Structures are given as C-alpha cells and as structure tokens.
Image 1: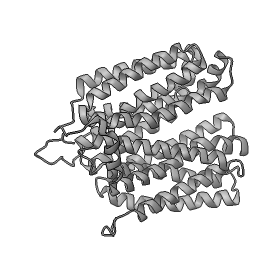
Image 2: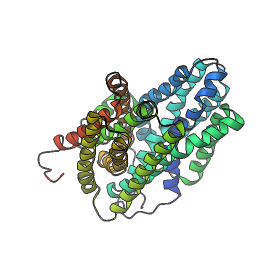
Image 3: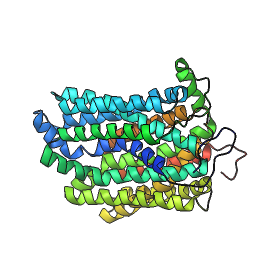
Length: 404
C-alpha cells in the first residue's frame, strides 16, 4: 500500500507491513483494557471488600471515557498531525495504568479507568485517521479487516491471559503489563511510524464543535457511520445480554460459555479475513450491498428465535451468523464513512467512533430494560439492530445513487 503523496493518487495495491502491525496494536489498547481484567473482578472486589457490581462501575467508566475521549483527539490530530496527539494519549494511558495498579480504593480505580480510556482513545482515533492518510478506500477496507482480526483475537486470548496473570501475580499486575505495552508501543511508533499528515489545513481547536458538526452533515459519512455503528451495536447487545441467556436460562457453565464466546469471536475474525480476500475482486460498496441483506435475514432469524423462545441451538445458529457477518459489514462501512474525509480524517474518525460507543451504550441499556419482560432480550435487541442498520443504509442513500 502506497504512502500518501499530495501530487499522486494513492495506490490501491495492498502491502501489509510494520505500519499496519503498529496500527493494529494501537486499536488493541481498548479491547485489551476491557477484556483482560474481566476475570479479575472477583479478586478486585475481595481486595477492596466490596461486591462485583461496584467493580463493574470501573468498566462503565471506561466505556464513558471511550465515548468522550475520541472527540478530544479528532480536531487535535487534524491540526497538530498524527504523532504528537498520539504520544500525549499514550502518556496518559501509561500514567493512568500505573495509577490503576496503585489504586488504594475502588473509587480511585473507577476514576482512573475513566482517564485510562481517554488515553486509549488516541490509538483508536489516530489509527483510523492514519489508515485514511495512507490507503485508498478500497485498500483501507482491507486494512480495517486486519484491524478487526486483532480486535477479534482479544476476546479469545485476553481473558485467558488475564486469568493466569491474576492467579499467579495478582490483578494489579495486569495494569503494570498494559503500562509496559504502552511504553513499548510509543517507542515503536517513534522508530517506524512516519508522520502521515501531509498538507497542513487551517484547523482551529476552538472550532472543534463546528468541525464535528460539518462532518455529521456529510450525508455519505452519516449514512455509512450510522450503518456500521448500528450493526455493530448488536455485538454489544450480545456482550451485555448473553450471560443471562446462556448461563442463567440455558444453564451453561461459565467454562462452556467462554468456549461459546470464543467461537463467535472466531466467526467475526474469519469473515473479516474473507472480506480482505473479497476486496481483491469486488469493490467495498458491492460487498456492503451484499452483506447487509444477509445481516437483515439473520436478524429476522434472531427475532423468530426470540418470539418462539427457541432452544439453545435455535439461538446459537443465527447469533453466530450475525456476529460473523459483522466481519463483512463493519470494515466496509468504516471505509465508506472516511472515504471523502481527507481534510478532516481525524475529526471524522473521532465522530464515527463516538457515535459507535454512544449507540452501543444505548443498546446495552436497551438490553437491560427488555430483560425485565423477556429472557431473550439479547436476541430481540440484536434483531432490531440488524434490521435498523439495513433500513438506515437504504433510506439514507442519495436518490441518484440507485446502485448503492
């Protein structure tokens, strides 16, 4: 994949090198920070003489930080370049990770987790902006597929790794490990990642709100970003509601549930890599046009499973299909959202990321509300997310784009 040059078009030929690996590592900070300490909830609660519900607030604080933090980096990375805000974000991440490791109280841990998310956001926002700087929309969809591979591996390996570390070294060691990872990543970026922000544009920090609003007013950006965010919110509905359905309703053991969780993660990883292969032969938009009807069909299957109160396999099959299809939908939707945002790539990346976590938070709340009246809340909400994503994509297209 060619580097950006102001006078020449970007090459559409893919070449995965150390730059892509660094970008993948940057996007992995958030999922690692979420998944790796989940097995330590009981140990953390015991250490602070509290209950796990209190510890869960540290995860809530992290999600809230992810929503707020991405907006802080968008305009900054467009004005000052990609690397300076990235260094600041990594510094915040390292310092707050150490503060989490030293946290004397649960309140301190909850507060530091919020600021740790602020630091982790730099990797998410700036990695997407760098992809937009370096690669064409077609090639960027292949890069996003690789980034999804890395983010998909985290739910499989991170909890297992976190459980072993907690058992042998204690839960505080987890935060020392991610702090060391942040330092290593900063050194690697200094050595191998160039400043990809080419021409400087007149971006003013005090106009951040106006910049974000102008991004939101772009019909193509809003269409693709909402489509991808709503579709992906089904994944968060699954994370929120699956313990109730599979452990309490279907009676799976925590170990069996972990294997099920890993199997679905393998599904999205596999389809994300299939997407990379398909992009060698088809345009990104064509893949999205094909995969979204598949997602809608699967969503209807989830609704049927919920309505009929299907047995375990009646839920598992459409669920696996939905999570896997996200590997085709999300990278192509993300590439479409950023395709026309060269001057505002950082801001656009921040807005689309914040939209996704806002939608995800609302969907997670929806699962909690629906679970009051139905044990199949997860399936109901996933079906709604899939159908709404397809409707959004179809209804928001420009009239002249009849083929889109």
